[in-house]
Length: 184
Image (tube, rainbow, N blue to C red):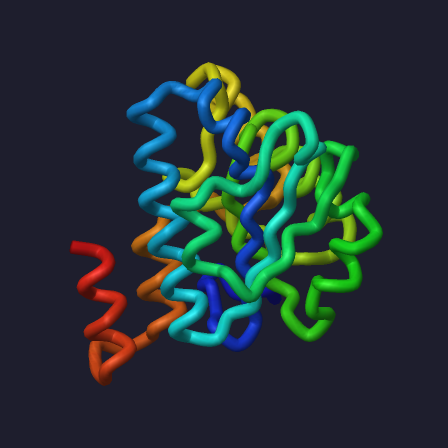
């Protein structure tokens, strides 16, 4: 039986298509919250040595990953794609760590690239954690519909703080203190 807890030893963080032109099409308040939460997850992943994968949908047209996220993962080269499901991009498989069966999924748009990626990852026997406060769509109803579909399909719908504190597991040490400062 699979665990319903994000495990640091089993997880990979995936940030899907958080790009400049696409971000500007989102509601500003929702986008700011998503950027803040993906930033917390990316910084926590760095501190805890959780692998990070970035994707960019047609960067020539939609721009590069926003600086608010890119600054936290300068060592990660984004995977360029034209398919909606990141899973169907060949380079995604090359960067996906096979020994890490848990995918912590963030980014945009919830009802297109996040949904299709999640469904393909489930079919590939990955355990998918969709971080609800770190995904966005232009229209809230589309995000709500995507979350309902992903939950029904077997994804674990979670939030930024739950993932980070599940990765930590205990309230002690320098990494805990650093991550606790990010949450405040």
